[in-house]
Length: 350
Image (cartoon, rainbow, N blue to C red; front, side):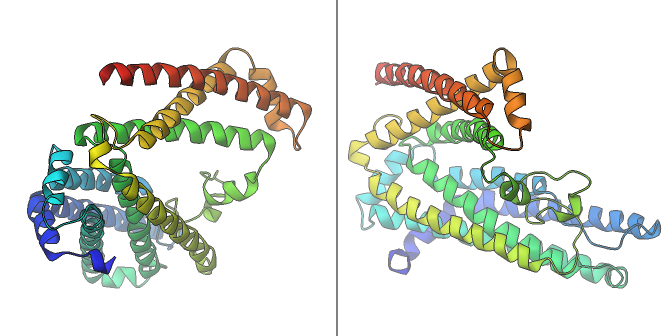
């Protein structure tokens, strides 16, 4: 990436987004301070009642505000008309590759600023409550875990932001497209999880990593995904998850390079950056509509009894394959119809 780094593009990007970055850093600093202070009050109560002195990691919902902050930063940096901005920059001494790689570098540098802000707030909280923290177990370890969370999930979010944006030629459409693809991913993930559940495919391993734990298994949930108390001797599991997330980031970097090569200004339409991206997005959204329709039909009218029977079986049974056939037929039919309708709408729009 170093050969694509350009000081002029870095200056232009940060100059365009300096206001939302400053506002975002202040907002994030306040939220991080409030969260750490709330954790301290909770620890006071726990130690006061002799329940536990193990410091707890925060829930991932705390970081949801960063999604909106980085989206605002990206909007300000790109401007309302992304296509015209790209054409203007490409007409100068910059290549399309340089522009997108510098965007990625700028966003990662901005993420670094937010991590530094969190570290500052954590150190400040430690200095203010040094004597109390001395009897708390795991405060430094949890702060390190929170830093890993910010870096890993923040990097994944940045890659998603840029990659989704590369699929569209219009900035405003891209922002709505992000919402549509997010909702689509949710429906597809739910349906895929249900299918894997009644077919008993990797269910124990997936549950161990991702599923929200019950009260009995709460202390064994992955601390990178769920807010829970820190216990000694769990770094091995945490580092395994970190390694998996790093592999995901590496895969997303490959996808970024593929999308960047496909992005062609001269071949872009009013909505999509190229015909291949149009077909891919329409197929994905159509599949999500099919999954949503299947969820309504299977959970509602026809196969509710069959689904329950297949799900509670400890092994793959005839009911499981009947349920799979039902799912595939419904999803396939609705996906095909949705695809045809969406393509006709896009053709009418031009």
